[in-house]
Length: 96
Image (cartoon, rainbow, N blue to C red; front, side, top):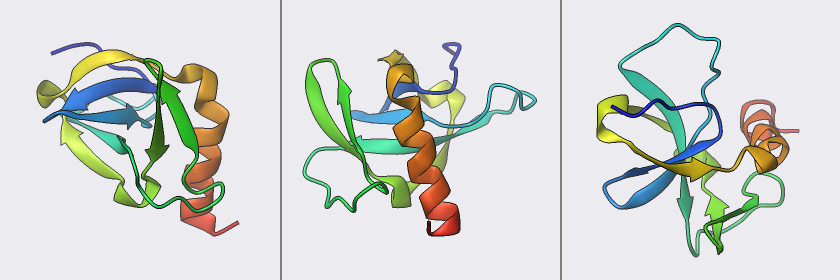
């Protein structure tokens, strides 16, 4: 199992996922992620465009889920885009 940190991109069944769970939480077998998808319908701020490995993806915030850590393979990080990701989760939870 790869070590995973907040805003890392991991692959699960051929889909890139952004780890959004805080590194301050105690370890668990699962981690909270949001998929990065091409062609996903975007809502301003809720679904920011994320650049990763030279490609553009949409953060599919409403598809937030938990995945077993052992099923994920770390592929990189989008920590430089963490503010947009955090804003998207805030909008999902509060609506503003």
